[in-house]
Length: 85
Image (cartoon, rainbow, N blue to C red; front, top):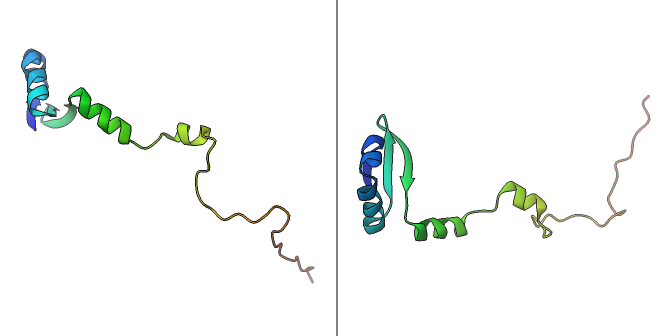
């Protein structure tokens, strides 16, 4: 993966894009720190398809979220409360 300072990526965007399409992901840095990555659209779609669902998607789904064993309703054991004394 080639590393591009943001000013170079901006000034030579066509070259930056061509490098991404030919060689794969390209890293962009700002003041020496990693800031972003440009990836080909096919790679983005592959990553996006493999991503986990968002919390919102999980909460709105109709399917079970886990395999927790839940007791039948009304069959749960209750603790007896001992009178204080």
